[in-house]
Image 1 (cartoon, rainbow, N blue to C red):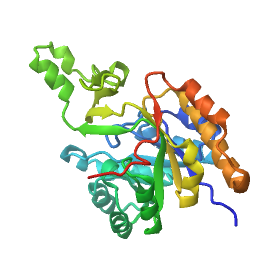
Image 2: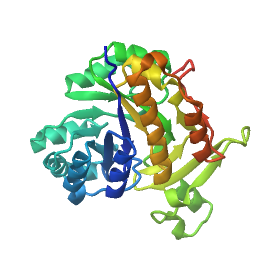
Image 3: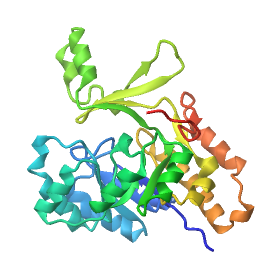
Length: 314
């Protein structure tokens, strides 16, 4: 019996990245813009959607549009028109988290395959099946789940299951611009409140007093304040186990990483997926793959299994 290869998914911030990432081994790419999606490596605007979809399809990949923001009242009037543009582009799916997206789709007369991604609250199969009843075909798992919990979810839902396998994770988000507010409280000049002052290109680091070695990147954008993990997830060593569980999509997080880094990671995961799928009985995670990852990994960010082998308490 042939083993089903999982999709290898990544988020792109430009047309050039779409091309590069599919050529590096990705079989699906996500794109979007900050007004509708969160933590994107760059904006691909409404006017570029058709070109982006055509580019991905020409290269043999799928293209998903991300609209997983926490929608505010001010975007509700424009959301139906944006969703019409998504449908008209020929995108393969829409990634959402807020039920307002479903209401806007109905208002717009739009039908699209739906991937439900609420970030940290996708933690059980009952919730997965609820969103399946609302039309979702994919469930994007929370990053805080362990291997047993992931297996239980996959075994109890007919939905596709997506799992992040590599990269930085978000551990805190607020719609408020907390850094700017704090700087203002300290008497900083108004420049500190300007958009982009504390953006990804000028990120700050949060350090715990008790754990000085833990450094958490902090930045602000139009969607508020974000605190990211101090290490990078890396599940390469158990990729074959996740394939056996039946995970449908392996997500490589590209956020706050260079294009060269992401391309290298995709090539390595592509080799691992293909090697196990083609010959599972003789498969082993090769030491040179792990060494290649360590070579490109920033020295101040360790690679870890995240919560994969932890007993989580909510």
